[in-house]
Image (tube, rainbow, N blue to C red; front, side, top):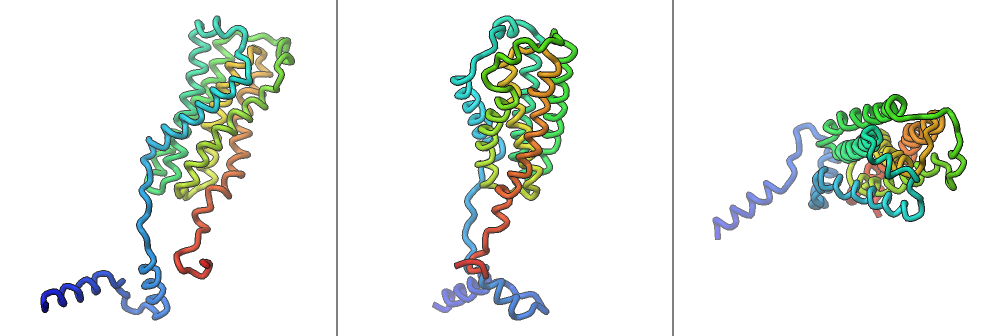
Length: 248
């Protein structure tokens, strides 16, 4: 019995938060109150698992979108053109990299790992534009551009927003320390995918049209969602502490 009593006293000493020397009494009581209400944190899925889920949902959304969009009439011939395949590959690869980088940046222990992925995604976006300008046949005529039922910049917006919403649901469950940057990278991923979608939809070879409605919206929309996503991805900072002054 004596041994059990000693063990109980030892457990109490271990569980009781240690008050640092010189700490005001009110601080000590606050630490003890918080320690009493601390609960286990649910495990967070690994970045790769989140990426596979988030980007898989984005691809599924793009596929569903094509049930309402027509494929470009010359797609069969273009798929036999190495430069066209390279263009689509660069856009899709950039989207995948930026998605992974944005999810890593939403996890405090992983955020630095996402920087090179986002930087490489931007490089692939620029490279894809250069592939279009220098390796794909282009015309100065705008004929055929007006035949699209939906403006191409709107296609990029819809496809990218659907993809961004899926990524956003995953990111919002994490704890991004730089929510605006994370939202920007998620936007880059989503609208690069939107640019790939419109490339498979629109057969225009007019450089002005393609640069302004296929490529430029990636940057513009990414900037817009970085502001929209800041509030969404900052919610975790506003959650009250257990039994804190804002809790009910």
